[in-house]
Length: 101
Image (tube, rainbow, N blue to C red; front, side, top):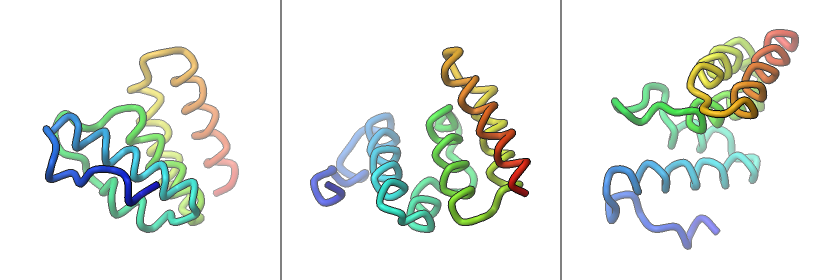
């Protein structure tokens, strides 16, 4: 599936961001957490930080055992969520990460 996604350089900025998120999600689901973190990056470009980016960062960090950093990412995601489901999910993940730490 990763090979089928277009390269970020071939897309508009918004589409490139969505492409990175799709690639990161595929990497997370494949257990390739370090690669997902490299793709997402530690500090997103201005205007690119959103719920999905923070949530993916949190899930990848949690999977590699960085629970406090994951909690911070999930807490950030909870402030960026646009729906009760997004904010609730991120808040629950932040709590679980804190308990695991």
